[in-house]
Length: 224
Image 1 (cartoon, one colour):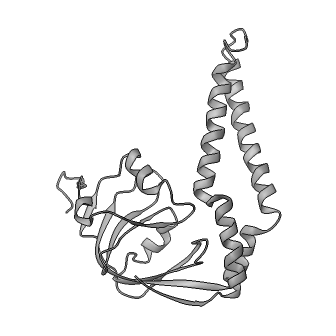
Image 2 (image 1 turned 135 degrees about the vertical axis):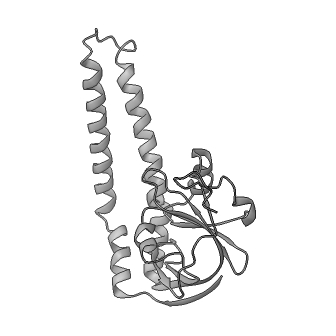
Image 3 (image 1 turned 180 degrees about the horizontal axis):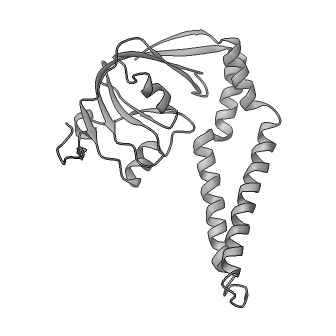
């Protein structure tokens, strides 16, 4: 994909400053501890409601272990959502440089993945340079309503942190040529597990090999 650069707008700079402000990290810690405390209290109350004798490592372990597991899961999930400290450092570098990267994409083919629960829309997009780009996330709902993916579009992002500001339409809608069933948890983890807060990834995959597990319509017929 072809990449050009342009100055950040004042609005984009304000958005980045909001993510790196001094009070953001303490606030995130407070929210994290509050959520853990709430879940732990609920689990403990549920177990105590059974009325069995409270013996450490014989009874309390049944609410302590799930609470600890949830705390670890939430911490890891938060790093995926936010990108962690590395992404914060990237945002600070982007603010210092004040430059926006604009990646121009010409679409050659599209595979849509049926949405599962509240995961958000997902697409495998083949570019004119035969690069496979995977888009995923709830933020895609708004762009999908506006016709995404398009035959041509631009990804506007901060170059260091990969903070995505906008998908800019530059062509008409490109209907998917193939729709596949929701991916398994293992596949979701493979393709989405290392996003580091991003909403797309360039994959080292053969595009045609991704056309598996075709979805079916309500009457039992394949959609593609």
